[in-house]
Image (cartoon, rainbow, N blue to C red; front, top):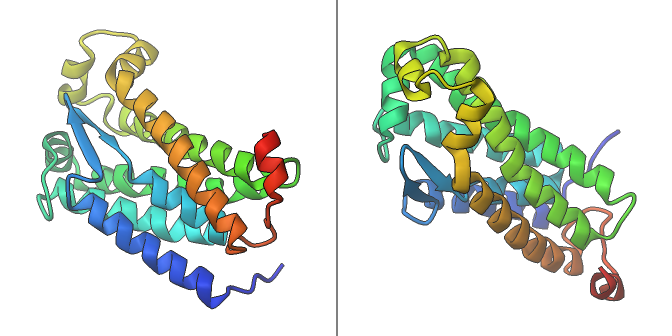
Amino acid sequence: MKTKLTTTQITMLGLMVAVLLLMAYTPLGYLQVGPLAITFNMIPVAISAIVLGPLGGLITGAVFGLTSFLQMMGIGGASAMGAMLFSINPFFAALLAFVPRILDGVLLGVIFRGMKKFTNAYVSCAVTGFCAAFLNTVFFMSALVGLFGNTEYLQGMMGGMNVLVFICTFVGINAVCEMISSTVITAAVGAALSKAHVIQGAAMDARKVVKA
């Protein structure tokens, strides 16, 4: 099935990439808490996936992954954990930076398109925003344990804990904050874009938003 992209949608994609880069290289995108940071960078990915579907999610997810990988190398910022993982295995570090974010972005486009068949755009955007943060956490932590779980560095961080206990303890309040902020902001921005008819096939009846 072919998808025609409007000038407005392409402009939105460029804007979301610019916002993502701004957030990645300024304090706007990260709130450092312990070894992990609360990141808001999945929000532009979610919005791109809403506007342009899986393609938009893939592109911005890849940009998010690129900024993370560059920061592992100390370019445009620094991540202590990322730098350590890069020193252990640069190839695995690249996989950790790119794959979870790209996969997340693609799935967000699929999730939004599936949701809007059953409910209004506001709810669809809220669910997509929640999934953006939730899936990013799941994919990232799964890749982290899968790729680096046997290393001395990660074994030391786990301290003999069960993998699931370690993941829950490690992400903790960070993941909860990401899910709440991503859900609320993505829903609000998505509702505005839907009213402006920027989202393909998702013009929203304002009365449905009130009922939702």
